[in-house]
Length: 589
Image 1: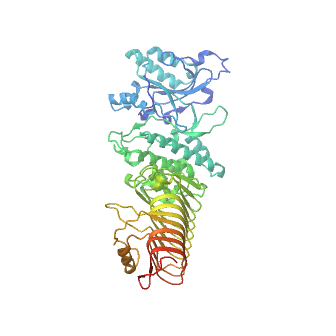
Image 2: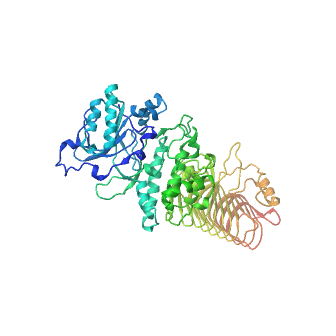
Image 3: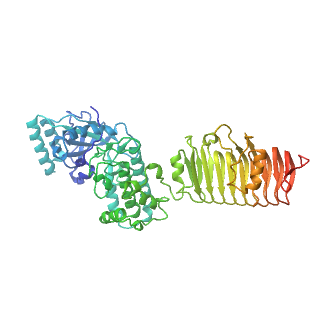
């Protein structure tokens, strides 16, 4: 029977007492005596136990070796001996069954489970384990195993789990104990790497509907190193002893055990039976704060309590080397009430302060990224979900690019800022507020530009037709010295429209729309010195002063109001004098 890690608080790595180096087997000192690495053939006939690493409540951890040099960690758990730590017989069954949660789960930031068996130990098996030479100097372990052998003698056999897992190095707790006394800037990259690694491991668990339930520094491992280096990356999330499968989109189940995990890092809702992955994220938020802000272990409990229960957010001293917006992430991930917290991973982005290029593939990512953007950022949009969504951004000097134009028709964007570039997008609507922006290669139902000296080129607007479809403007321009080059509007409904009153002065607009139909291009009467070049559309209304209109083809009607315009090569079926509201005798200027 193959199984993987299980739910049991008593057998976490945190409960394992580390053994001093001199207690471990030294093959050189023993002349390579094979008796040091006895093989427990009754349950692992391919694996030898090379040295003893530590022990806890009826759990023993060894360094194992298979073949010539394949190292691993082996945990031996005597289930029957911890019966008083489990609620009932069902929990004992679940102890074995829930190890299956991690079956086939492999990730760079997870301690990998290689194999697990639940073969019972006989008295002889316990004696073989007790006689391993590396245990002979550890009286506590020998006494425990002697008691277990007597129990096995009485019961004939003891239910036992043997788990073989990836061999790791020291824990994050060891690293913090050594490095959280003073702030060493040389360790800032390592601190950020730790946060990234442990977050990616936790996110992988959650993506596979698994809650860790005991996320803390003692259960975060550095990688094993064959050299003398103590702390090797990547960092890995380990000790799945409290893992539980969770169900549904909200990942809440009412059968979870109360009061699980370390009290220091435990979310308040775990005092009850209703909780979700938000409890893991809460713990992660506290650990990330401890790592980045260099909080000493003796201060963690009081500082965590003040942050969570007293809302003393000023305790978080963010620095310019932290991830972007990470102070807010910590605040919003560790709220006392679940309903006030960040809802899931889609609201968490680990963004390096020097990062400037983002690719978003989902609505959730695009929604989350708005709080992270700064001047100079590039956002590449590649959302294939066709759900209509509205997004607003307030940022200067940012670039918004579409990767695959046809796939973005469902987006409605509002960008407030200056010196931005918006390009290669196929949208439902676009509103740009600000000056000196560049808008190019856009296909859209409706474009609204508010501001000065904006450059628009290669713009296509279309009015959807059909029952129930609202006919809107093609493009509206408010401001001075804006330039629109290569503009096309097509698929315009000829039906009368009376719903544009909220855009501008209704006296001219209503009358024009009632007479000629949908309006493709509108330059408002507040505008000065705008340029419209190479435009093809059905209907247009030009107001304001000193505009340049050239190479214009109007398939129905264009009304020009205001004064001091320059008009070159304008062709229209109906050319209307904005002052007299009468059609001119010529249709080409």
